[in-house]
Image (tube, rainbow, N blue to C red; front, side, top):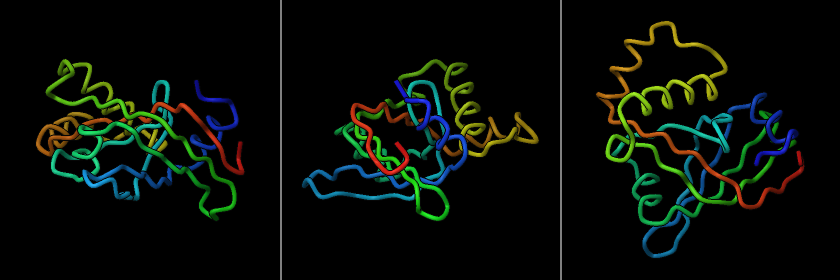
Length: 139
């Protein structure tokens, strides 16, 4: 469960740094746009990205969400839930992609049909980081 103060921060800012782990155990970091999605913090990713390949192999990850000034942040350590075309019904994935767009941008898309097609063409998945441990200056 996401505490209220973390919910507030994740609604105010959409700036994140995701850490996943390579096959050799080394950290791989990615800058992402993210937002509050279901029981965690979510973002979308294309099929060919290292972060998705790493998470499929090992769902353990950390996500830092920070204010623009970098003063005030939270780190969510936990497991990634992956919603993709190979494990999610098409309508559920479409709705999850839309929910993630709204959460990560703070707005509605001007053309949902165009967005839906772009997500199919890009082979995008939704990643939701489900926290097991949360810490930081904004907690």
